[in-house]
Every structure is written in C-alpha cells, then in structure tokens.
Image (cartoon, rainbow, N blue to C red; front, side, top):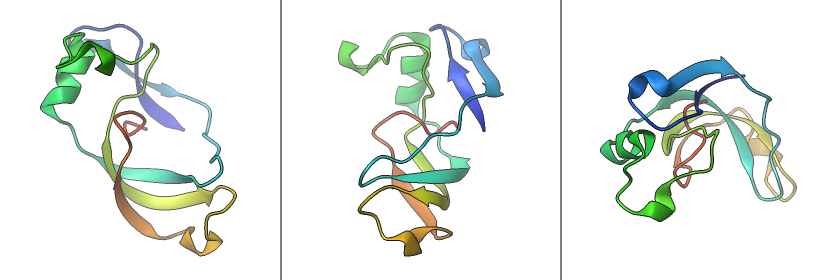
Amino acid sequence: MRAVVLHDFGPPSVLVAEDVCDPLPGPGQVVIDVDVANLTFVETQVRAGRPPHPSMLPPLPAILGNGVGGVVAAVGHGVDSGLVGRRVVTSLRGTGGYA
C-alpha cells in the first residue's frame, strides 16, 4: 500500500509518499482502505517536532493521521466478517491515517 511516511521531524517536505507493507488486523481490529484522511493543526505540530505535549511524538519512522474514512478491507479475530466492504469513518488514536 502507499502511505505518507515521516522519517524526520521538520517542514512539510519531510513527509514522503512510499510503498509500505500492508497491515494485518490484530484481534478486535480492522484494516481500512483509506479514501480520505483529515489533517489537523496538532498533526502539523507533531510533524514539525513541536507537539502540544512531548508524549505525542511518535517513534520514527511514523505514519501520522488520526481521522479517516474508507472501506473495511479485513477484520481480525473476534470482529464480525460482515463488516468487510462497509464504509466507515473513525479515529485512529493519532497514527496510521496517512495510508
């Protein structure tokens, strides 16, 4: 899959689109084929290395992105397989949406 990856903190030019491994859902999780991802002010500050709180800095490399919309592509153990193909909007706890 394609993702926008952060390898270093800095200006917008540090974000690089590249191929990454497809994620696998863990128990109770789903994988979403992202159609839209929002961009927040906080994400711009994290990208720059100046988050509102130091605990918000992710280990690098990172795929930022919190809010996404898309289609459920796969489900993990314990998740209803009927969700595959369903359109969803969700929050991802701050990472992974730019994929």
